[in-house]
Length: 497
Image 1 (spheres, rainbow, N blue to C red):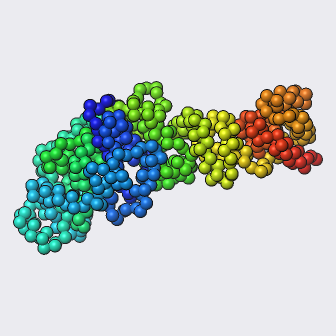
Image 2 (cartoon, one colour; image 1 turned 45 degrees about the vertical axis):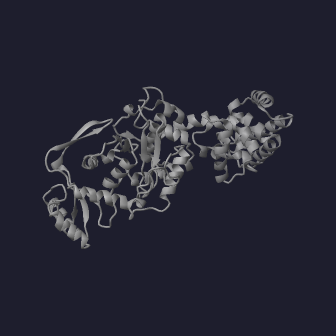
Image 3 (cartoon, rainbow, N blue to C red; image 1 turned 30 degrees about the vertical axis):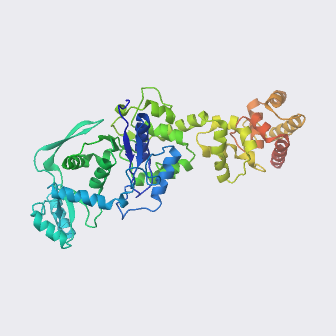
């Protein structure tokens, strides 16, 4: 859907944890809407929960978004016309608007102690009732309430929910949702320490920052009517509300939790963006994967670059149904996007993974490797596993794999010696010069070509699986190939009875 006017959207994470897949998908959709419409993508940090505040979380959000290529137009680091962009710096603004609600009769100070509220909750639970505030302070005369506030009596500010009728809230992808007001609570807007909760702070900020579309998770649906009531109480025009689908565990059974995320890491999987980066996934693939968990272009197109998504994303095609996290799909997309990269770009991205594995890769060798490495990678951290042998001084072949099936140890030793003779006679070991003589040797010795190639691969790479062996030997060089073959011969000699 092409939006008729520029959209202003915001990604507003709370720095109480790390950026996970759900947050990244919200940010991605925000970014796509902003870029598609020529609007603005705003980063706002909702840091009013001071007890759960995590130092460093804000920076991790920014680093992860930058890695994904989702650059914001306004935010705490770059400023903008509607700042400040950290809620902790906007405390007085919220208090002003809370007071406005109190004066207009839409909110009230509540002086109930934690002890009274806990007793109330226990009694309601004993009666198998939904715990909710009983309105004890709701009808205190305004003059009395103001005097008690002025005297410094501890209090919170609650929204004064209408007791009758209903409220119909419109979600762009779910349609109209109607809630009975008598089922809704008088929720707290401002805590006793003066910090506003999301129910007030986010509504005030979205209005003041002229946000046109609010994209957020389906977990906000239970408080959706409260937020609509707050907008109506102020007499403000509401944004377009979009509640995105929930993410389910890979099994499809139940919503993802922090405990599930911890279990995933044991299998080398993660829903946290910085973890995915460390596991060798590339941002193009993560964006492609995340976009399709809740949205589709048609029933067959799956490969999208970020530019493709900006062009083709349609907010009307968002699907509200829960989506199971499918890591096989991520592997699939990662392989596709790695093969789509320019080889110099891939070299730049893959080099740190060799270095982290303890190798000292040089660009010249990496450049030669790219054509045979690129088609074989699912993740960047596969690279040192698949091709670390290029940068080892020596490799250590597995004695068992030096003797293929249906080949005896004496035959394997003879084959290795003959391979040494054939390859040492060549001016250089290349695909063009080497493959035919080795195939001819296999025929002469009565061995299958695959068996002879297997001995050669194990000797040269120390691996049962590697990139094509002749292209590999050309990159390694004749001298190193012969040195490694000689070492394999020595191993085979110790195996003879």
